[in-house]
Image (cartoon, rainbow, N blue to C red; front, side, top):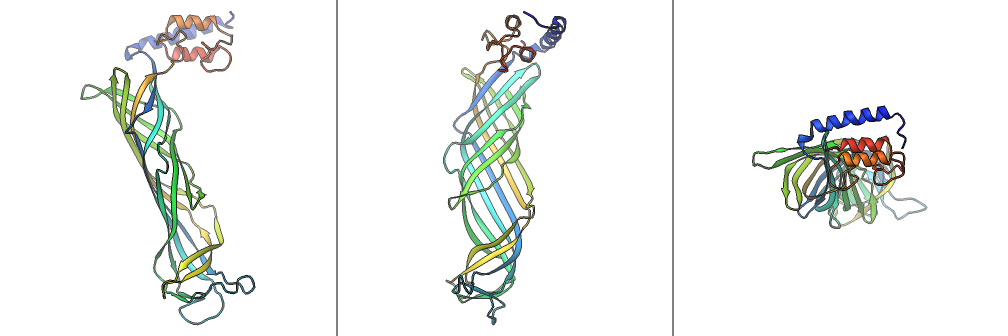
Length: 349
């Protein structure tokens, strides 16, 4: 076996074991995989508001659509299809409160406990939805085909349809420390602030709705209880945030839109809408309730599977140094090397 600079390796081993031994009173290292149980859920309330402004005009065309709608300014007179100015806001309110499945790891070494790999997603189909509304304010106009009057100067809400949420997930984006300490009831409290990326998959009238994944931070607070079958975490957390999504100069051009006539009721004017889209304001409250049961996972460095990392594991690793030995190749690189030694020493005790 050749270790290269053996004195440097031995110095690293000596220093790392000394550091681990000095804090071994905190308890043996562990790697626990927690799986979500019944009663776990995810809550998301999201509002979006997107302003736009421009003009709309009837879909009349002397050649292609001579029976189409004409828009005429004011409430009386005129004969030429004319663009009408407007200002509008498209808004949606999404509400999701759904049972979830998923898992996460809590690992501990002499550096302290860490939460990693949190993944939770909806356990049932169609966990929520939203209604889309266009609130529009336009100058007064009237139409031909159909004949209708549209008094303007005030906000008018128009339903645009609904959005169905097919799935929703939260994925942890980086490992974070956790705090596990005795509490006043004689048990243990568990706290961690977990950064996640939230992904929502939705559709409207069968067409996908583009909802960009967005970040959130779950400030999870709860209890850690040791049971005969393993630890149980019961905790919850949430975050409320508001963000701006830049429009980057987005526009719409001749977007078909049908609106009901105001006077008389019962008609349907066929319009083509154009305009400039402004930045979208997104408000969100993201929350999760976690009831999770833990079971021990493999601890990197435990070559003999006895649940701890000690001199026997170190001796095995040094014997396999430079070889392709899966039992000591903890990072799966195909070679037992310094990275595997560091993993073993990081879980010493």
